[in-house]
Image (cartoon, rainbow, N blue to C red):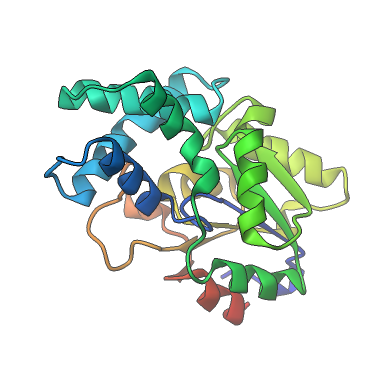
Length: 233
């Protein structure tokens, strides 16, 4: 079990953990193709099937362009047309994605005691727009654009830990907070650092906008929302 006494820094995945990215993905895809009859789970599976492949193949591609490539591949799969304007708008839509209802309150509680850090598969422009929605100061922000790799690549967390080590922090000082088993808790288990699962999909079927993985990667600490974790900690 994780000892909370040593924790000084909370590192957060952003989209899916702090930001309700699944609702935003579905809404934006339905805005492009209003006549889609498939349910939300199918739409998210299309997205999950494309996103991680693009990130793996093109780790230096900024996330706004990952979204653009993803929507083009979904359109090809559905045999649905897309205009260049729609493709670009989908890529930039992330700047308008909003937090879960409990995010801002939970972050405010946690910021009273801990340094907060973002570790996100995102581009720099998008994360700066997103942080305005979160309303708390972050000690540091690590992006895929700066690191040149996307989670679950171990390179991401090595970069984060090496950077924080320069400030005098060790792995035992850090607790990673994330929703995605695929992007975050796989590397946590494999690299031996502590993490807590914010299971935002606890009442839903399937893995949503991320690939499904073995339950062996579920960490010891699990909460169904961020505010419960904040109050517990």
